[in-house]
Length: 220
Image (cartoon, rainbow, N blue to C red):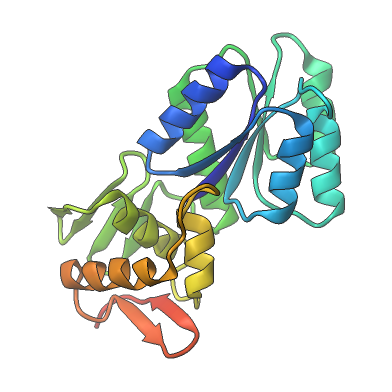
């Protein structure tokens, strides 16, 4: 899963990026409203953390422009303490949730997980496909109750597929959602990750639709 952080305070932006990467997200960071708006307009994200008090273009304007352009990714806004009017304006502009500064990083991560789950139609923090269980809270995967050892990119590929069970996912979709913007995106590596996952998962869990992509299915 890929997340955009738009935050102008350097220390907080770095802390957010570190926490998100530690939770197995691919992360891009923008430090002003203009760069944040551009990233959200041209790149594909599973969620956005958006500060409202941004230089060059404020967060409300950024959000309104995204929604007006049909960008529907979940957005978690960050507001100043006691700025209730910002919360109202943010929700009215199309935000999905908000947090008031200062906040606990674990709460932010939990709210992001919930937003991404809801966007994919999932109610539980555990995603299940037959004997395969992915715990989004702890970034852990098990098969028939046994823990599965995955690399960070193998986990990201499986995480995205588990959030979209039964749906055809193209290789380009996977590339957009598992890599940050500045990462060297070699499309062939996706096939490598899929091959590695197939060796670790029950046969038939990941189907290949020739020329189109991959589909996650409960194994027979």
